Length: 532
Image (tube, rainbow, N blue to C red; front, side, top):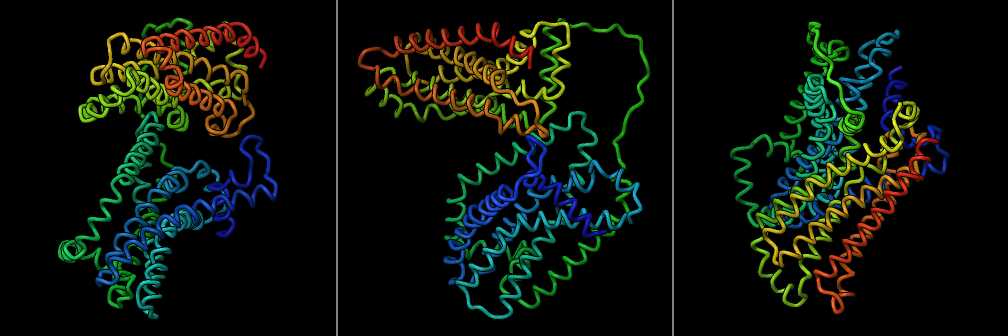
C-alpha cells in the first residue's frame, strides 16, 4: 500500500510528463522518453553543470589552502536553499492542503501510511533539487583533494544529510505557507509574492555572484575564522564532507533526532492539519441595498476577478507592469550617471535617444499579453458568457480593457520619468509618449485578435492557454518584432527623416494599424467569438 501511495504522489507531481494537458490523453512512449530526457538535460546538464563549475572554482582556491570545508559549507547551504525552495510548495499542496485528503482518509488506509507517503514524496523532490548541488560538490572535491574511505563516506553522508535537512525545512516552511494560505481570501497572492521574491533574489545573486565568490576566495582565511568562531554548527556541518569522524557522528545524530521530532509532531497533528479549512466568521444578515453596476463595469469586474484569481495568469502575462515601474524608478535614480554617455550618443546620432527610449519602453510593455489567452481561458464555460444578454463586443471590450489599464498607466508613468531625465526636445519627448501609448493600444488589440483567431477551449490545465498556446506565442513575437523594427528603422531613415518626423510617422502608422484591428474585432471578431 505504501508503494502504491508513493507512486500516486509522484504521478501527481509529474503528471504533465505522462498526460498531455491539452487533450488529457496519455502521451506516447516516444513523447514520454523525450520529456524525461529534456528534464534530465535541464537538471543534470544545465543546473548540475552550473554548480559543477562553481564547485571547481571554489575547490581550486580552497583545497590547497586547507579550507576544503569552506567549499562544503557554501555548496551545502546552496543545496539546502535550492532544495527547500524547490519542494516547499510541493509540501504545502501535498502534505498539508492536498485535495484528496478527505478521500484517502475515508478509505481503510492507516493514517501513518498516508503521512509517510506524503513525506517520502517531499523527500524525493527535495533530494532531486539538492542533489544537483551536493553530488557535484562531493565529486569535484574528490578530484582536487586526497581521497580516502572517510572522505568518500563523508561526501555520501553530506548528500544524505542535506536532503534530510531539506525535508525538515520543507515541512516547517510548508506548514507556515499553509497556515498563511488558510487565512488569505485571495490565495493567489502568496504564490505571486513568493515567486516575485524568488525572482528578485535570483537576479540579485546572479549579478552579485562573481564579486561574492572573488571576495570569498581572497579573504578565505578571515571568513573561515569568523565561521568557526561565531557559526560553529556550520563549520561542523561542512567538516562532514571532508570525512571528519567526530563531525559525521555528531551531525548524523542531531539530524536523526530532528527527523524523529518532525515525524513525531506530524504524526500527532496530521489529521488536524489535513482536515483544516481555516477559520470562518459568522456573518449576520443585514438588509442592505444591492449595488448595481453598469453592464461594462460588471464585465470588467469579472475579467479582473479572473485575472487576480490565477497566479499563473498574473506571473506570465503581467510582468510588463512590474518592469515598467521598475524601469521608471531606475531611470530617475541612475539616469544622471548615464547622461554623459547619452549626450555623446545624441551628438553622433541626433534625436536617437528619444527613439531608443520609445523602443525600450514599448519592448517592456509588450511583456503584457493578458488579452491573448483571455478567450481561451473561458474554456468549456464559454457558453455562460455567450448566453448573457450582452453584445459579443462588450465581452471582448472587457478583456481588452484589462490589458489596457494594467499597461497604459505604468507605461505613462515610465514615460514621464524618462522625459524628466533624458535629453531631447519637448516635441520629441511628447511624440515618444504618444507613440508608446499608441503601441500599448496596438499591442492589446493584436493580443485580443490572436486570442479570437486561435482559441484553445479544450485545455485541462490553465497553464496551456497562458504559456503554451499559439495565440500567446504569435502575440509576443509580433510585438517584439514591431518594437525592434521601431528602433532599427530610425538608422535606415535618419538621413531622410529627423527624429521628430520619424516618431510622427510611426505614430500615424501605429494608429492606422490599431484602427484596422479595432474594426476587425468589432465586425469579424465579434462574429467569430459568438460562434465559438
